[in-house]
Image (cartoon, rainbow, N blue to C red):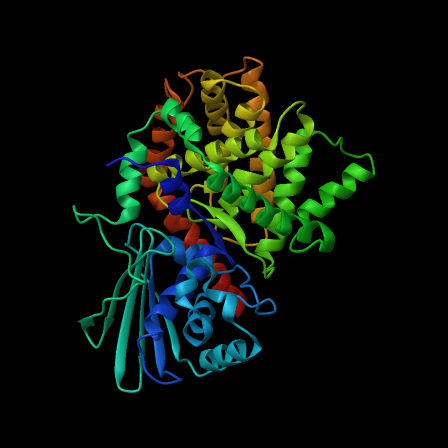
Amino acid sequence: MTYTVKDVLNAQVAPALGCTEPVAIALCAAAARSLIPGEDFDSAEVWLDPNVYKNGLAVTIPGTGGLSGLDMAAALGAYGGDPSLRLEVLRTIDEKVVEKARAALKQDRIKVNLLKDKRGLFVRCEVSGNGHRAEAIIEGLHDNISFMALDGELVESPLVRPRTAEGKSPVSAMELWLKSLTLNDLIALTDQLNDEDVAFLREGVDVNMRLAEQGLKFGMGLGVGKTLERLARQGLMRRDMLLAARILTSSAADARMAGASLPAMSSAGSGNHGLTAILPIWAVKDYVDNVDERQVLEAIALSHMITAYVKAHTGRLSAICGCSVAAGAGATAGVTYLLGGDARHIAGAIKNLMEDLAGVICDGAKAGCALKLSTAAGNAVQAALFSLQGVNVHHTDGIIGLSPEDTMRNVGTLATDGMVETDRTILDIMLSKRFSDVQ
């Protein structure tokens, strides 16, 4: 089966309100809760794979006044989430919902379980109440509800995404196709863009720019973007395209990780990936002469394609920071394209970026992600500029392959096979730290 650029954009790019791991938990809980009659429920229990558990552990949930937690995400989804909104499931919560969720946690009615040996994105939620027990499962993709049941009986629901004729989920089928493509194939996909696609890509820019503007205005979270902007105004850092990319991207991450009630246009299932895939390219355009908006949006489309390609190899979640190696690769490809580079230059930029950032770990979603997005954005621009000047990492170096496809596959192998124990160790450290904090 083959897909069009519209298919990829529809499947891989979507607005997401809040970090997508707590959102996936809230969505699963909301889907299960929707099957229980009545206005209340007795209890909810959630089972999570290690990566969803890790990423949702400490990040602020939008609309809660600074609250966080896996159990809180489940409670919010069950009490006030609208599952039909998918990754914007929490758009409907208000103060009353937050208070109900707080009360449920105090009464120990929400339980969270870690599935230590589970591989791949997985969320399962059971909600009990009014003599009924409902269940929902999300797997593969943050909003891919694959199963719903009431009292042990399968429920047909428009919320459940159908499988292909071969029994594969839509996500896995598309990822298999993506893995079969070459870099030239991915670049060629941008030729298929129509006016509707271009308008959608521009919407993604507008959505993510609102987050960046919020972060810059209020210095939210760590205030990385606001600090970089201040240093530039003080003359302590030179404002160039690298710094511009870092400021925009980190400002948006500051706002998002602090729980701003604004959606991000996500890429490959992650809002922070979306910020990294889009904003560095949008920042660089101001330093390029004779470029029109259509070319900029084509570059962003290529960025989304490359991001999806790398994530097809690494998996949705892993011990490697996807903003660095996946969205970073997308961003450097897009910047190189925007600066007039051809496929050879784009290949070199991707290799440069991978050599530079493949060792960046993912230790969960939190305010500090703004630092990593700042690094990814700046290094994406640098990798592009280096390649355009003939600086390219040689294939004999480390995990770098003969081709960009080989390099991206090698990073996927590193993420899926080589860093499994690293991932467990990261989560163990995070859990022991939180336990110590409680003590």
